Length: 291
Image 1: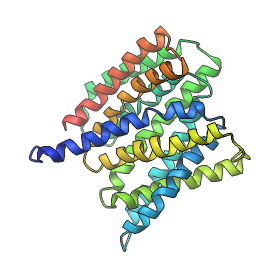
Image 2 (image 1 turned 135 degrees about the vertical axis):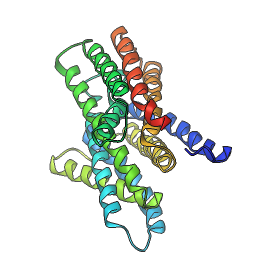
Image 3 (image 1 turned 60 degrees about the horizontal axis):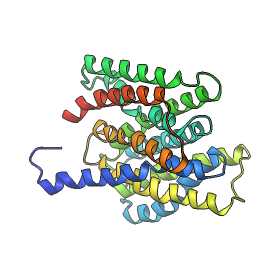
């Protein structure tokens, strides 16, 4: 942010990010509590959020939507759908701690993309970040190597790559789109794609118990609207890498919540590898934040 902004203007985005972080960190807990297929969980999460976001977006829709911004917002929505589909699926194969640690490597992938686009990420910092993140992921993956856990790890990494692309496209789209209009387009696209995929694959969409419906509602209102909505708003005021570095707190909070609420204590390799992953995320995001 510019140095000349008043203190309140600098404080507001940080406060929103803090609340969003706490809300997003409950996403894995809600997903674990929902007795439904991963694709159904993702579809309902975005579907419920879309029902709230679209009427608000319609009231804020400008008379003319720039074609490029519309395409960027739709592309961001597609990546958001891919992120949730892969990440929620990973929770069926691995622990909350491993899943959220690996999916939170998004800042590392942001750094890779921005470096490839020539946006000035220092080569040494990026290489150190990649080395730390890869080493940490290798240590995490060595705990229960092979089988279902490895499948979950790969799905979580795929979710991280999708989130990295989403952060960049979201920032670019909101340069010319009002926040509420952007949210309606991105959420609408993500929800539509997930529901099409769910119906096309014959995934169960109804008939869940009360506990699952409460978990789905929690994912939509708490993790999606408050959590990701807060991140999206912050992207209007902060660089993508700065917003991404806040995600460093998500695996820590989510792991602690999983341990406390679901008795999923992380193993020592997950804890040790997680520290390296968090260090890599910090190294990748630090130069972008200072810039």
